[in-house]
Structure formats: C-alpha cells, structure tokens
Length: 300
Image 1 (tube, rainbow, N blue to C red):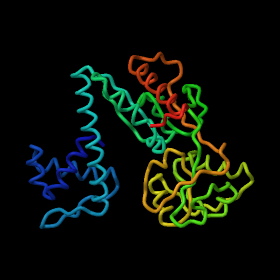
Image 2 (cartoon, rainbow, N blue to C red):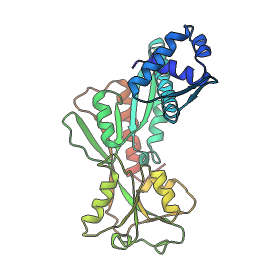
Image 3 (cartoon, rainbow, N blue to C red):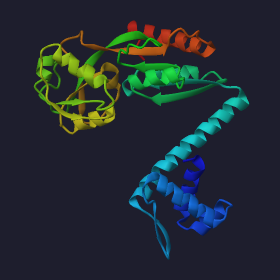
C-alpha cells in the first residue's frame, strides 16, 4: 500500500463517483477503479457499495476514510515542516511530556525556547515509556515524565519531587481535611492512564501497597482529564501531582495528604552521552532557572 492509494481512496470517497474522482486526479476511470479494487483486496474489506446510482461508503469504508484523512494530514504537515526547516535553515527540537507536567513550569520552558528565531519546536504528549522510545529514535530531544526507566542509552534527571494530592468530588466526606492514605483507601479509586503500562497508575497503586493498604479500583481512564471528569461525577477519587490543582474544574476539590512525604518525581530524560548543542544548552539553562524557582518557593 502506498500513499497514492490512500489519496485515490479519499478522492473517491469525497466524490462517490469514479468518473468524477478520476477527473480530479487527471487519470482515466478504469485504472482508478482497479487501484481501489486492489486496495480493498489488500485490506480485506469492502470500502464501497456499488450501485447504478453511484458509490456509498460501507461502515468499514467510513472508518478507513476518517483515519486515512488523519494520516494524510499528518504527512502533509510533516512535509511542509521539513520544507520550511530546509528553506529557513531552522533547527528542529522536540519535547515529549506527560499531561500532568504541563500545568506547572513546562509552558515557561516552551515560551522561552520559542523566542529563538531559528528554532522549529515540536511538542508531543507521550507517556514516559513512549518518550524513551522517541528519544532513542531521535523524534524528540527532551522528555518530561514521572516514571523511572532503566535504559543504557538514556539518562534521567530528577528535577524535583512533587507532593501528591487527592482529587475529591464536591461534598465528599473528606473534603476540607488532610486525609491519610488509609482513609483514602476506603473509597473507590480512579486510575490513569489505563494503558500503556507501566505508568503513573502503577506508581499510585504502589503508594497504597507499600503501606499494606488494599484499594478498590472503580475505573481506569486513559487520560487525566477523563479521570477528573469521573471524579466530578462522584464515581470515585484519584491521586494527582500538586500542580494539577491549577486545573480548576467544576465539581472537584483538591486536598493535601496527611503524609507530606508522599511525592512523585518530575523526571527529565535525555539521550546519554550526547554533547549538548546550542538549543539544548538554552533549554538546560531555562530549565535550571525554573527548577530553582520551584525549589525556592517561587512557583509561577
């Protein structure tokens, strides 16, 4: 399967008529029909229903069309960015992050780097495990996550330890208190992310297990925002890093824990042994200031 086959399919799906689709593609209709038939054979599913009145997408065709549009859009964006970098001699710098670190100082790092005119900055929401893979593949240059990963090609720096808080629905019995982990274990727990694992969900479970506490997991969500929505719906409680409290959301109250030492790290991951270029040096300098601000209490 080639990109041209996907483009042919999308044009046919828009026109729902092979003759008009072929005209848009500046090709004859029989070769286009053969290409679509070959695509269906390769996929193993019928994408179009054919009748005397024209074409209609099958349910499989609708699904394939939706996702093919996303693929082609990503390809077009990538090509445009590549041309822009080549034309302007921009340097490309990628940052991966887990969502829970984006409510603190990470936006300030991004803002600082964007002041550099010769920089093309890309951001990718990735789990810590995905960040390690992306770093090794060269897709990103810095990763910000929560999970310690032992990999000989990657170095991880603990920027600081962040206190955990409990997110409670409005009217919860523990609202306005500083609950213990034992008290929290009495209520249904919502974990995130559900996949891929290991993840922050496993870190949270470990916080309870190390204290000999059993919890009842009511729901697992793939995204933090979804988990907080479930909390607001009174389906359970969840534990979140302190900076998430900046995310004001109706129906939720954040409370500190009685055990102040229960924390989760913010880790910066880099490729090991790589000499920092000018952009990395700038990123490290900005990061050092932001970390010092956090440690000294000047929290933006």
